Length: 346
Image 1: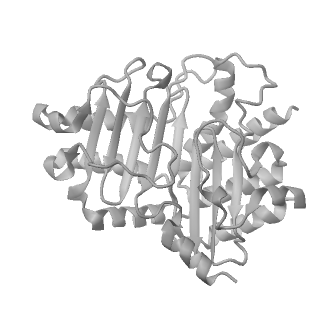
Image 2: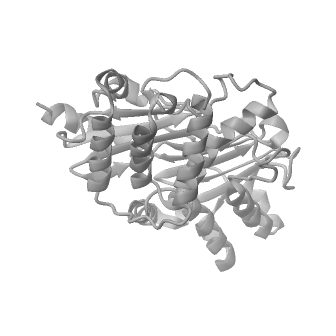
């Protein structure tokens, strides 16, 4: 069996099994620490040299969501046991829905290869090109982090004293957004993100839309891109406090959809921080077409004192979605965590 086909089969089996699981999600990071340690122990010395970095290396901030060469250990270089250990690690940090979407995006590389007419031997569109990187030593360090990254996936986690303290930047994309042909025809991985965004937009009256719609033309990509620190100056859009009760419920549903990509209690922690900063200060902004469907480019974002969430569907005739969650104070654990590491590491 070809390595790529084996990897695809493993991914499919693991994804299917997780659809019937209920994760034990906890803000305590001991499960993640144990899973990361087990994953590292499963690697050979050469593999570990690829996978492991110091916590304060600049590589930790070298994130992106395009297909490109990366550092770390790719899935295609793992055997079945190592692959399972890697996926077990991922599942300790993501909720079931977030995990299922992530593994579906990885599998989508095979569909994209077929759509683009590439041969089976092509390595540009390859579900094996997703890299695990460990920053620090989870078995001994109080502060450490890890990353899963490849085309349309980037999750960046930071931990301190067995607590997950940061899970952003967190990116999920999908190309195609809707599979138009072949065995996976109709697959729409980010369907909820699209539907809930349009539901909120279409709930607004004319005067509310004047505030919410910031441009008739959608930007070509998420505005924060792959910046180390997210920033969109002069927040725009309609305030949460300017919505009626039904609209506010739709707003919170959309917000929660992104936050609950992560484990249940960490998502609750993120939501509490957002609420403490003030739901009334959150804004919903829209740009582009108000009609859903291929050929109708559109963009929206949620922005508040502590968070930016972006959704963009403009590329490939508006059948190519990028979404990202950014913590304005705590991406990569923030500067304070890095300083703490430098001051207390021996």
